[in-house]
Length: 490
Ligand code: GLN
Image (cartoon, rainbow, N blue to C red):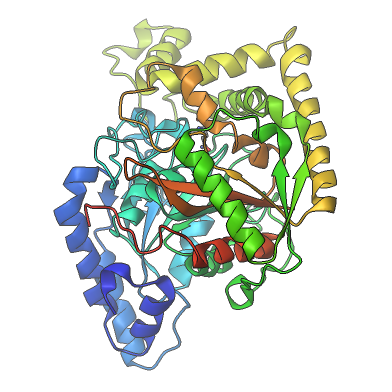
């Protein structure tokens, strides 16, 4: 087993069978981070207790104790997720001094399954962005070509996974932040159905859209990780009571009779030539394997970007109101608190603590929620969101999954779009509707651009039908032309 390329299942088995110790694995990956991450900037903090935790696990194994399904598997965690005793800044100066006193449910479930948390991964500030350029910790580089962005907002998770600094990583997806960076970095990223994964301890961006999920190297690894992190949590009342299936044991690449939908509105052209070719090839591949291709109209997808930026901005403006410098987080350096007004206190603290993209969203959201504008913007957006969801539900009566590109182009150059917010928002044209409708969606690597950058395809399924989505992804994975290609940094 070459550790660098070992799957999550292989690592856990080897640790349980005592072929390799958890300590050796942890040391190996920490050394990789040490030697490679100066190029990528994907890690923002390391877990200082990782080696000790691995040693403790090895002692338990030596004593013949039963251990969890992810025993010894090293994971990296996006900064959005609280980790007890390890900094959780959400990529923001506002939380630069925040060390959570508790673990998010996702992290406590990973720990309960005996995985080893190596540290925290860089991201766009408060998960707002598509390029990882809005982070307080600086940009992350794409391991396939260091001049290019890794995507965002989970850019650190994607880069660390693609460069194999971890065996698995966790991201969050509000409008595409797991799928888009997974596509840009050539890994497998899954946004589960809304309600599958607890948001307890996940820094809130837009609560009706946010979901955490795996960003890993294979469909099987994604299924295994989902089995650990999904499921009802009494700490998050929006989590589903449904049992968590054994997805990894039921993966089937048999595409006979599977109906794959294509959204007509997504096929009006305008795709980068390499993305178009990859999309066409993925359709052909599925046809060849026995799938039936069906064209659908989901006309409300035309409005998904504006509706997403309205809904997410409104929710963000409300969620981020808590960062006022009073209870925790950043506070401006006031010489004499008694001489300033409350407005000045909040204004200076928030003015310095938040970056410009976050401020733009707070202003947009506050404006749209203010009386007089609420009905015209927020309410209207919620109505369109409902219509969009209804159209998807109708669509899924005709097909099992929907296939589309993840983005219109492969990764772009660092600096190319950061000064044009609208251009940046258009990155989310194919991903946001999935969140608005609460559907599961994922990215699977299927192409490579002429410049040598990976291209992912997006698969969406109906609510709670992750199995079918994973099956189609596994079928594509089995014939993927990018299988075996690796980013040059590794
Ligand atoms: N790019 C989108 C945004 O900036 C998506 C972010 C996300 O999914 N967290 O809002």
